[in-house]
Length: 307
Image (cartoon, rainbow, N blue to C red; front, side, top):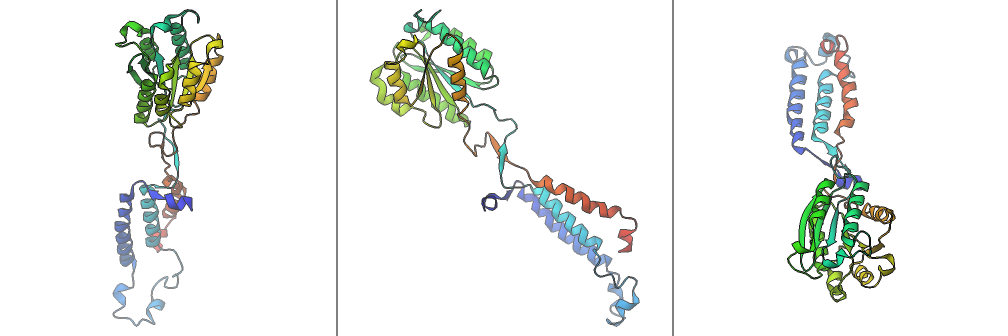
């Protein structure tokens, strides 16, 4: 019943081909009727006995086969479909918006070589691990700014992240909620789903209400990578993660944190039915073998002339 509910044609205008097909069938049938000109001069009871092959009424006529071929061809061209399939050029991995805190505190060296530099390294490692996946960049301090919309080119993302420094930000402060909200809007406008990754070393506890409103929810899940020593990962960052509904990931000296984040990001698949990631599956080509079998009848020696 579900298939019947979604059944439709991709090119319904092609069904108009049924009209000339029906006209051709009728015209061919009329022209192939050799008894038409004798019906006015020979009695109906005698006519079948006086014509050649008058008793082969059960045989399939070329006109009937032509009608069947035309109808099947029109239906195949119309593109019947009832289910969806992944689009051929859809991204195999959902995009991620990277939200990077750019403040003087990120220059601290308790995470070697510095919090900011380690954050850039983690971004580079993540992009390398998710090769081909699109990534965008949002920078924030006292205001949030879109640096780069999602792009599959990791070199552009890393170079942009390298160029960010506290002195290029117009206002000092902590507008994490504004940055997450901006990232969520960018993902929503792309229509491909995705996740938000926040790299920060602290969060203002006074913005918990704004963070709850800014959280991406199921549409854009948030992951927070704490750019502080693991022993200090809870506290303000833990509170911010809870308000965002985010997963808090402590930074590690190896790539364990990056691999954990990558697994979480890959869960954020595009929603079912998303036109950017799926398309209606063409089913008309399944009629091709049947059409080929019927067309083969036309190659039967003397079949058309004998009918």
